[in-house]
Picture 1: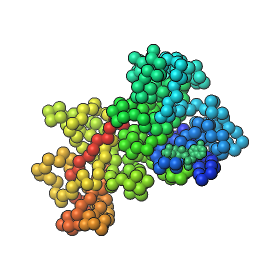
Picture 2: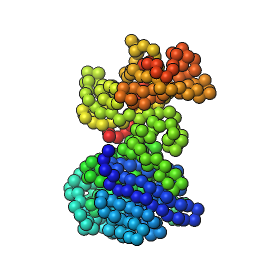
Picture 3: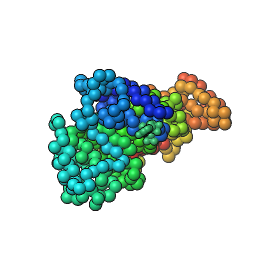
Picture 4: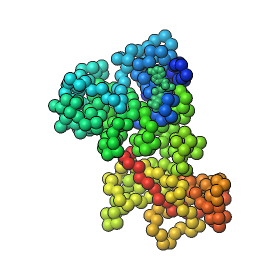
Length: 359
Ligand SMILES: Nc1ncnc2c1ncn2[C@@H]1O[C@H](COP(=O)(O)OP(=O)(O)OP(=O)(O)O)[C@@H](O)[C@H]1O
């Protein structure tokens, strides 16, 4: 596993609320997810040095930002902040906003040309903030944060004010940041879809504490986490990589821990990383590999355990390929007919859903 870049062990007391959060930020995008009022924004503010009453320790890549006796002021922490309300300087053009950020730099930062190109804002440089749409302003805010040369980017529901289409356009840009600029991102969101499409990891927060921190695929596949993720139905998330295109049939072949898969209706280059979601109700079990079926994806699987849901349905935990988890929901009658029991090998026909942004 890669070295953590940022570690924290923080406490803060307010009337009716107590933050006691310990964790670490890994490279890539970490979604900070949890119910309203659990302390997500407060944690971001503590990391940025904006909560004077916070106590505890923050270390970043060999340097110390905070201990019991020392506190690096907010303006000296190499942190970029992007909020929903993005606070561009209204009296400066986009180019001047960028220039201001570049002058604030204390260390190396990305080239403006690269940031402008990645965020697609070349045509906006002469505009004033008041003349930008919500999506444009958010891209400019992101550019400004990047040009200040942050070592950690903290984003608090940056896309919450945007409609679905604008979000969908900005998400791949956000997704590209850690790799392109070498900056890890802590991203507060209320939206499960954003967690699934954007994040490498999820930090689950509840009542002021970090209650779980894991890879998205592991978190979403674990029943113990389903209530905290908003009561999702049994589901697994698999990360996969495009290995080939079959242009005759318009199919894309993917490699995943579960085995080889094929998807229709997408067009991606070999090597593109994708994320798939497979809901238990989109899995059909058969004793033999299907001879004739319209399902594109059939995998040999092994039964791990069964849970009678009490409503005529049985939830079956399976493993596929290199121990990729899979859930199937079948009727009690089907479970009996297939003689499902731990260790039994059967076949699963699955219908994976592709999640928005390449990973
Ligand atoms: N300025 C403030 N003064 C006093 N209490 C505050 C202040 N800001 C937030 N709180 C309280 O601190 C707790 C944590 O708030 P915080 O905004 O960090 O939660 P959150 O998880 O970000 O919520 P949301 O998802 O609704 O944005 C809540 O109980 C909130 O009411």
